[in-house]
Length: 144
Figure (spheres, rainbow, N blue to C red):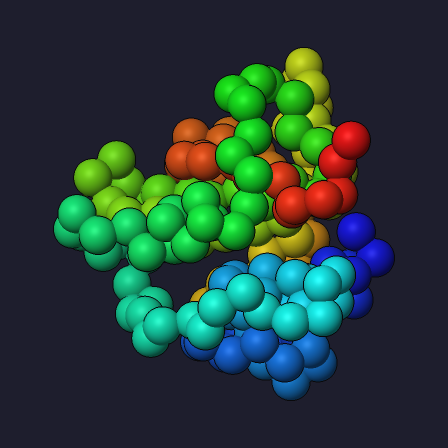
C-alpha cells in the first residue's frame, strides 16, 4: 500500500502515469505495477475518458485478466486488491481502484483511485461504489 499511497495528490490527467505530475485511474495502477515489478507488462492502448461507454469490447477487463489473478467471489476485500467498476449495468468496465483498507461486515473499506476533477485520492468504498463493482483481482506473486 505504500506504493499506492505515494500517488495520492497526483493531479488527474487522462492517460497519464507520472507520480506527482498526472495520472488517471489506470495510470495509477500502471505506476504501482512499475513500483512493484520495475516494468509494465504491455503498452496501454488509447482509450476514451467516457465512463458510460457501451460496447462488447472490454479492454480494461481483458488486460486485468492477462496480468492479474482473478480473486474468488467473496465479501471481504483485502488491501492491495485491484477493483474494476462498471458505471452502468450495460457499460464496459472503465474505472479501477486499489483497496487500501479491507472490508467486511458493515465496514466498506477504502480505495485509492483517480478520477476527473480530483487528484489521486483515498476514499470510502461506500454503497455507490460497491453497486458498480464488476471484478476483483490480486497482483501476481504478492499473495501466499
